[in-house]
Image (cartoon, rainbow, N blue to C red; front, top):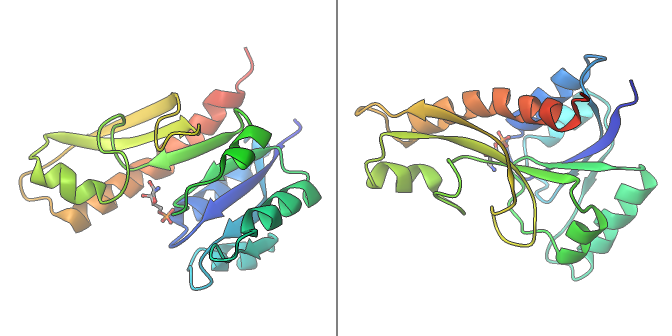
Amino acid sequence: MVKKNTCVFISGRGSNLKNLISYSRDNSFPIKVSLVICNNKKANGISYAKINKIPYVLVNTKRPNYENKILLNLKRHKITFICLAGYMKIISEKLIKSFKGDIINIHPSLLPKYKGLNTFSRVLKNKEKKTGCTVHFVNEKLDSGSTILKKMIFINETDDEVILRQKTQKLEHRAFPEAIIKIFRKY
Ligand code: GRF
């Protein structure tokens, strides 16, 4: 099987990156993580690129043309698919257009509820009974592209933000690979 040459964008912990790298060791998993782009030089996630000898590029989003650097590297590494995994920066229309339909994101809520940041505190404040995560295609509007899959968990009365984050991340580590398999599954 020819794997999709994939770039994962991160900004922080990188647990989803770590998980995707480990899945992509399986020959039948549809993607290969060939490049990591990170906008935070202190991000723990970079260590997973280093350990696994995956090329990574640090970008400084304060620089006016940092997206050109991204586009150049995507081209250089022949990237055909992008996974946003905790990338805390909105990507430009230019980048979205150049990879139309080939960028996906994972978000820690049941979209369309709780788009944007601080999902766990908002979910708890609103006394929701359930929450979860969503993997979706990326379009020009924040957290609004079409859904590939969602996974749900129930919230216990004793759950706080820390517990909710842990439970959601566990769910994400199943949802992201499953969504990727779903996209590339051939009938
Ligand atoms: C995840 O919760 C994801 O849903 C959100 O950012 C977080 C990234 O976590 N977009 P990690 O860096 O993959 O551990």
